[in-house]
Image (cartoon, rainbow, N blue to C red):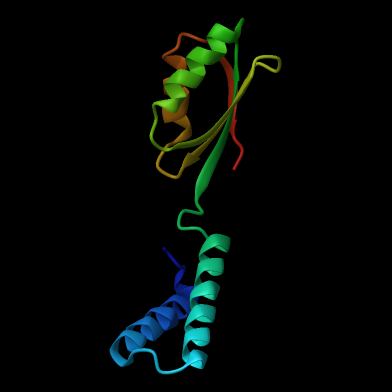
Length: 126
């Protein structure tokens, strides 16, 4: 579980309580309630602020004539480890890709180009 530095006290507090509980043992229900509450808060904060908040969203206009074309683009993009989401529209002739921060626009564009499909445009969305 990763917590952003500003929320580290929640996680540190929960970890400290767990450590002391292990040393002292079960001594009362109030302590267990406090431990459970601190762990719950740390878990909620980690879901609100996930480990990797930085992601890139790219949009490409790609000429695709059939489902075989869109499948070819989908297949090469799925091979990339850092691709989180792929949305291909044959109707709109578009490919939207969400990646981790490691993959650049040019890298994704080059992978799509390897399929032989013509890329008529593209932009960084976010």
